[in-house]
Amino acid sequence: MIVLGITETHCATAAVLVDGRIVGCASEERWTRLKNDAGYPRLAVDALLKQCGIAPSQIDVVALSGARAASREWLNRVLHDEGYVKEYYGVSWPSPRRALEKKMRKWGAKFGLIDASRGKFGISQPERLAFVTDHLGIARERIVCLDHHTCHAAAAYYGSAEAGKGTLYYNGQRHHFTISGVGAGGAGGQKVSATGKVYNLNNLRDFSGTYRGVSGGLTLIEGKMHAKLTNGNGVVMYLAGETEGLASSMGVQAYQVSLTN
Image 1: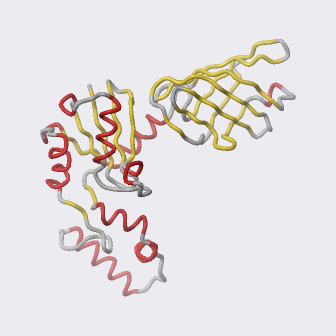
Image 2 (image 1 turned 135 degrees about the horizontal axis):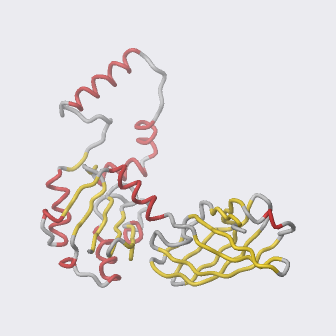
Image 3 (image 1 turned 90 degrees about the vertical axis):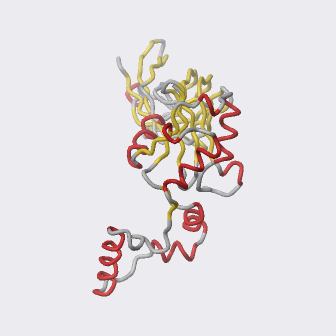
């Protein structure tokens, strides 16, 4: 099954999954050159499908993030208009008048009379779906709109990884360990096979711990991986290896390394 996933919010992005595995991902900002560009990512979708060798007719499902969509104009205003951002997100001293205005706005939004947020406006659902159908020629029956927070959970799952396994050679002996974190293992779109060197390891028990990226952390691109990681004990790992799957570049959040023997 081929699924095209699309988010139309800030940093609008498209991703392709084939049989549950991520094979490609692209953000609209890379083509429009507008940082965190929002809206339907038409250019990113075109480039992604071309790169993956997938025709629109081969797509089984288009999954849109969120039950509704805000307009591109409003989303980009929130991202790039500093004055409006201060007005929209600004915190003011509470007063009975402001409390009443907030309550009236919530009631008005509940009954569809006004927007719950000042200046925010969205696009209708038919207009939203038309971006997909007009662009890709896909029937509306093959488009699903998923809960926004469920999509966040899915992104966290696919961006994470199962624990990988490794062997440390220390003082002439082998010590097995596990490593888990973004980009290692293989539950997400990337599998990594690497070797490396360890420095500042004066005691074996200092090897376990939480490692974080140094000077850019982990880089995964064009089938190659390079990383410099360090833990709270001052132990440093330099890793280099091969990757399989989605090529990307990211900073490491954290790796958990644990000795198993």
